Amino acid sequence: NAGVTQTPKFQVLKTGQSMTLQCAQDMNHNSMYWYRQDPGMGLRLIYYSASEGTTDKGEVPNGYNVSRLNKREFSLRLESAAPSQTSVYFCASSAGQLYNSPLHFGNGTRLTVT
Amino acid sequence: KQEVTQIPAALSVPEGENLVLNCSFTDSAIYNLQWFRQDPGKGLTSLLLIQSSQREQTSGRLNASLDKSSGRSTLYIAASQPGDSATYLCAVSGSARQLTFGSGTQLTVLP
Image (cartoon, rainbow over all chains, first blue to last red; front, side, top):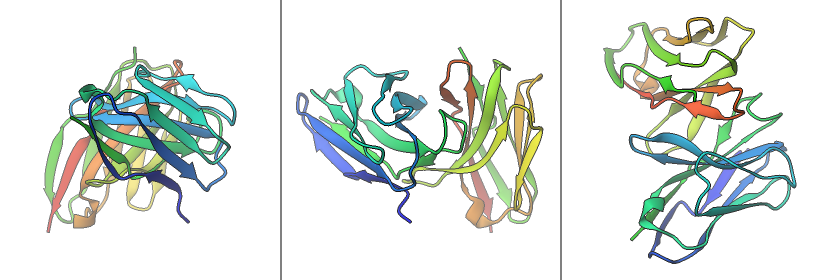
């Protein structure tokens, strides 16, 4: 049972480059989320998707876009990377309505922007 | 805006000790509270979820309590083991329909 799978695990980008972080879950969950984790800042929500076909901004959406491709997949795109986007990115999913059931997290993508 | 605080930031205990981790939140209008553990270099693992109508939840050696009126939750770990060493985070879901995380307590259980 894979749970939540994120790719890649590590990435180094130069300022201005673009990339897409991939996330897939095999638990038939309705809700999916993208978080970033920074020292001293804790976990902050970037975007979320309450159901297939819907996406909404979280606390720190600037510089990011998302796509809920289908029920399983939720991708995060950085169009023009900036050093401030250096972080660890986590994808998560939950079964029911937003936050009404436990969140399941992937193992993260460690992104460095130089 | 909801704020979640976890004190202490770090805790070291000898193996076998019972311990309590604390979590406080500023807005008592919550839907639920979750406790997670995070191992180094890994994602978060959900331990317990307490709905706002509940007072506590138990799973094995873990017991989480919730006092909405005082804005507090505790995670009790019985008979701690070295494998319990991790960072423990609490998170609160409230009226803003977001999950607000604390900064965590880094627990070290010494053999």
